[in-house]
Image 1 (cartoon, one colour):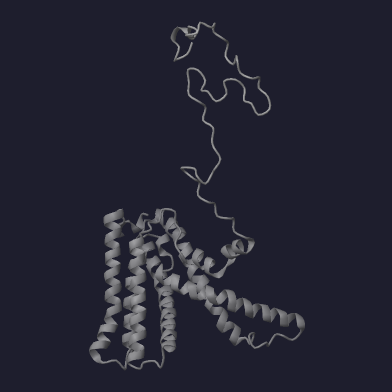
Image 2 (cartoon, one colour):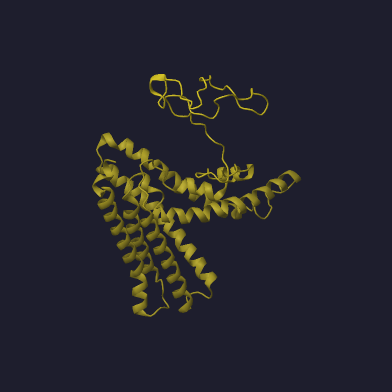
Length: 317
């Protein structure tokens, strides 16, 4: 019985020929001939689904798969200086809120501040060239890192004093990675003065062929690996505020606002922008802290409104 022949009656033939069994009148199957009934759906059901291989004319082609990375690429991703700096200085807590708009605003603020610093330094002859202005900005960034290295332990100490005793161990655990980032950056920078002061760079210890090779390899490693790690690490440490988001999402803007006002006080007491007219000097002394504070408050508000993250939860999260 089938859906197109109810009752199982034999098919009607207008010529009066008796019904024939299925496949009668067809040549026997052989090479190149399908068996009788091939290509027809089974009775009472649907044809089985047979997956078709990918063809260029398939209505839903599979996207081309990228070739696996080579050994050099895998090695660079694992131990390269820039990738290592990203793992060390970028926050990585599993519930971290990543807002692309906040990150874009931070980058724009950083680029605008750098451009204004270079323009004022060159326009008012504070430095002789753009290269000198860039070096001054790098020195200021390193001073900011040192100030942040001092401010961060003070902030953690305040949090420990305000946190309940039962939650202090968890707070210290969350603060371990920011502390590790500070130690890694300070150790990386310390390599350069240590190499100069000990005379290692000048070949003081290259007294035999073995030590000559060791000196050469160490010098190349310092220039090829340690230097990019330090430069990239300083930038990431300032942008991510020593990955303090691993402690709480509101700590980076809070520490950034604190740091920028500390740097402003240092500029005031050290006579920064001495060759700049008075009104312009005030603008550039207050421009950085005011803009960073505005961005920090906006970031705190966005975290509270869009994600429910508030400063009050810093002691419990």
